[in-house]
Figure 1 (cartoon, rainbow, N blue to C red):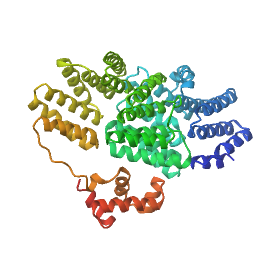
Figure 2: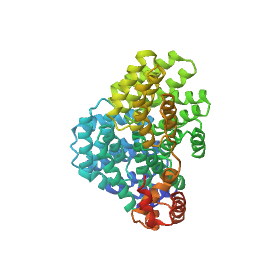
Figure 3: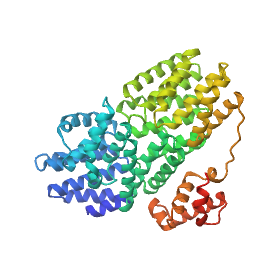
Length: 508
């Protein structure tokens, strides 16, 4: 019964929870209780029922308290991973982790699971990059955590964020790729959709908008088909941000409506990211009051955040309030953002906070804030935020009578914006360069530039030698969908078949 429920859960079938509940009722040995409890909790979490999942784990932990310490630790690890995503459990989870985790070495599967959640907890506090890296490595156990828990485990993805926060981005990418390989090898649509959503968000943070949107859209399609909700707000948040960078806030709002993310959103971390994106989209469509309200409501972010990915709603709200004439309130929010960013020590959020202060300041004070932001972001992996800051600094120089000096940061920002795929920033930089006396060729939207992220992803895979069935299996899409994407790519690239794809894709 448990095996049936697990198979159904990995494919998104709704009857999974019923069968896993039955399996838990039939379990007699400690190992059977632990296994059924874990799988039922994961199935509930996959449908957004985090509180129910946490309650199931609490009950399982209590039933194993005097029977098997290792199995108890495994359930504690799952509870702490799921509990950190739901504000109603955050405090209890933190207290439990501080009691249990500091003495663990990571020598057993249960210890590695608990350490994964503890590393994430510390990433939301005052831990240094070195401490986080050490904790993450201990929890990973050289790959044992992924092998033991598979790519379906929330705890594993908490470590991906920890590695990103610790500036170990190459390692984060390596383990994400391993997780996606694991999910595909096991045919787990659940694990694939989580891995793609998380990778999409990290790519968005770095400014890799095309790849970010492709990942997030594939994740969203899988979740909508399966009826999941566990990372749906994460995927919508990433896609929405990419649409905003393309200058289409209306499409972003429609995406929220189509995905059911309207009205008041649940008290979960990923929904705060989605809410901040929705606020920016509302402002972009002229519904400024609603947008500011959405952003200010993100104050509930006190539950914690994956450092370096969140905490930016104050900057967005400050700029919107300033545009509405509420400069004092805007300055207060921007100052609060700056203080929080200093405490976090994350280049991306600190650089954005400095830039916001510059945009709210005048004269030489504005120049200093913007120049400091450029220095901070230059050393980060957040290429889009770096580009945006270069353009703002160049714009300030041009407006203050220094057009020649403005050209260098404006040109650099323009090229970075083009590489990231932000048409909004590209247009802003081009307009500023024109005002500074620089004439640019207008890039034509043809060839590679005309491909959607999904079309580019499928075309790349076809050019690498993969067959349509192989691509369909790897992406959990139908063959007909793959044929549709390839057909469109052929037309846009003016090629007759896959034999010409590699050359066409290499002409960028």
